[in-house]
Length: 582
Image (cartoon, rainbow, N blue to C red; front, side, top):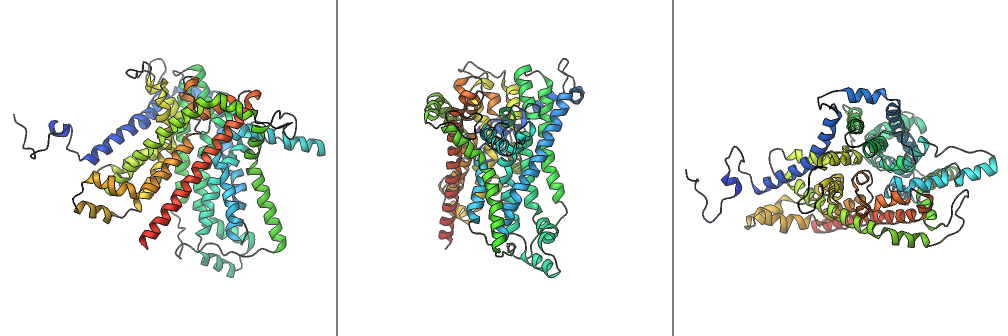
């Protein structure tokens, strides 16, 4: 039996040699898409399905069962952990709203000097991972912290800011409220001014105008931000661990797997509940918005009608804003003081200041820094490569199933880091790596892969936005001049996407550098530890907190530089495109 005719000069590919029903003829771009799909299935979908499968298996017989979930809800510890996680997440949304709403409304509703600076300062908490500032906030708001010492000395009272779950709520609210601030501010700016004016003509003013007209019209932005806050708090592992609050779901999943072992079904049951609540939160936010129309009549909405403040109103507004900013910046202030402090115990401020903590930090954490540069660099590089490929396949081709690449990559947002870590331990514990002599789950490469999967959605969105701004006519012109598809992508598309790709790389790198939830599950020895895990180890003992704070300052600087650099790249890219169109 002979092969069918082949184009002259072209060697047969693997796809040509295999029967069509086994391996249908695919274009090179389709093969790239298939390869990416296999990566996402192998390192995201399958490990998560493994976790789900074990949660529904009898640990002895392997048969399908719901007994594990029954055991979970029959345990008072797990029921309490479930309630505590829900309670902390819900209260964090409320407290974050109380913090974000005045900042968003004041800076968008009034002619307010310094509104841009205030908005920028309001975003700063996102730069610091919550677990980094948790110890610093204990020193400021704890039982023997700065605030309570002053209250005790002057008024004879103390307030349990950081006691138990209160501490987790306070830390998480301060860290994640910018999600509500960002989205709510954008919605307030897009409100149709004519609707506000119509309500005012009908007699609505002040609080009634805000409650009946302004806030309902800004609901899309608020709901989007609130859902993100709920998911992030519900899934967070590092903050409760550092505050020694273990009766929550994420810490319980970590403790069950690390103490009882990988065969303990409770860790997997908790993981399934964490994933389910992440998806449920997104679904609930969708239900809130479904069937409602928030469209504006004017292009861009026009935003709220800004007005000037009277002197008394201005003093009150500045007082509220400064008070809020002082609270939300307290973790950064506390961390900086702790990093330079000699001894800070039972005193409003450190007893003295020194650079010894930074010296000790550098001497004891060079391996952490080098590992982080390696892991985050690999993760960010792979993210932008995969993100660029997915963006091109989704936006520029008609390949069947291309949307599923986007869905699978974005699904990483709904998978908590602790769940992904548990899935990797379960899936790859017996997968030996040739020439390495150890399972993939114990090899440092698995940490880089976890960071890549966790941060892929960020890079993908940046690449999508960049490609949407590249005119299809430029590709068609290149192809009409004889350039092949891959040459067109390499010489035309990628250079024009460079700004977005670089911004995606920087964002992925900076956020991967301080990831703890997944990496804490996958670190098999101290030599492989990244920066976030190093901070966690330092913070475990009072003697190491100064060096840990110094390492935390380094982490904040890395994320801050990455954030600023990505914004500079994006703005420069916008200016270049505007100049090019002009």
